[in-house]
Length: 495
Length: 118
Image 1 (cartoon, rainbow over the protein chains, first blue to last red):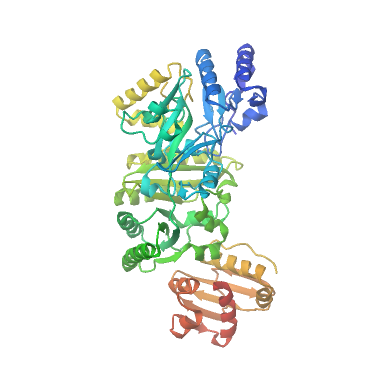
Image 2: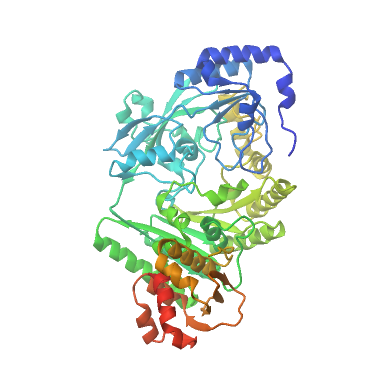
């Protein structure tokens, strides 16, 4: 393992350290402050291949007012601040590249309000998918859940343009945000959306239209512009009937056309397009053994759909069957079955796809998990080329070819990504993964795939290739909102 | 019964786990399997693989050797049986599930797959 960035800093400037320590304790209380090395270590790394880096302080505030005080103080002392919740972003996004204060928001875990008429909930950053799921189960409404553990933060995923099992219908999660409360680096509290007019009335956080949409100052900025302390997220009516189909197929182009056909019918909640390796990984095949073997179906699609009545359900199933028959005409060995059959064969791990959010043990138990996650065009040629290019590279670096992709927002764009397990305990494997990621980024970017939850090193490369006026605008916004560059510094290289 | 390593192929893995699960929940089935000294070759439209039962152990493998029973079936038919859109008997009578060897062991096969696919 490489030397931790920040070790030297801990030994230096102990006077400044003591001043900051005293001030932070005054704000959050001694119980919610730490500079113990063993606790700092926890915040220095995540499961990805990104290099670790130590913070100098960790605080766990409970209120927006405390965060205002922390940011005001950090701004005055030009101390870096990194917002943190569970650290499960798979992009190294909360690794404190320049040390400073990690603001762990886990304690802010209240579901503040549920507006059934306008269908939204107002939550704090520590509210997890597990919390929200449990809360909504008592209602007739549903949120959406990613292929991620239940302890991941809803707000973090929404701010980072995450996606989940209703993204085919509604797009990336930032599109479902009605409004936010955020603390700017100077400590100012701002409200965005209709709550700018009626912020104290939680019943009036119903939209972020029609007004200049300032939400973009916070989404996918990876905590570089402030800390979001409240968010109103949309929920939808839960339909009484829900079902799944699994399609096994062999021909990549025909399978992708099948995906496209189904998305245009607008009858599904979600459609996943995966490689057989991904299914093996989910089923619990050990790391290194999730490989495609000759004769196996190469591709697996998961179709998730729901209905209000039996008649609607049957009509949808009929349309799915018709689309599948067309696939079978050109891919004769393709088969479709229901998820219960797969669960019967492969066990609960596969059946758990029905019960998101869920911890997928086989993905996490080898110490390393990363991805190349991108949004890209839906053009068949681009997707097929992207798969071929990525598979060749993954083969070259001897990892598993776990494609896990999804149509977004009615197939307006495509979430094209690869889940990559690796072992941090194996000598040289982290470095090998870094090299693979570098090549994957370069190749896929050339094909029109833009990484989301972008790791810092790729973000810097994007800045070199992007339109200079766009880059200048980003820099202007960043320096205007955060003139001292305290918020998650080093993240996109905008300082 | 000794539990062997899981197979890496997708069909073998499913069959292996299903046999394991059913033997765990059904003492009768476990007893039946323990006494089943057969090498069953499943010839599918995806690929062929074997379930070997010997000395109270079982193994699922793509290494084909000395089958005592050979069954030919398409995966589509397999799913139909699992989904109860058809039955094993009906598949057999319609020629969708064929015995290439070991027809006399029909009862054993029926009991084995009846439990696995139910």
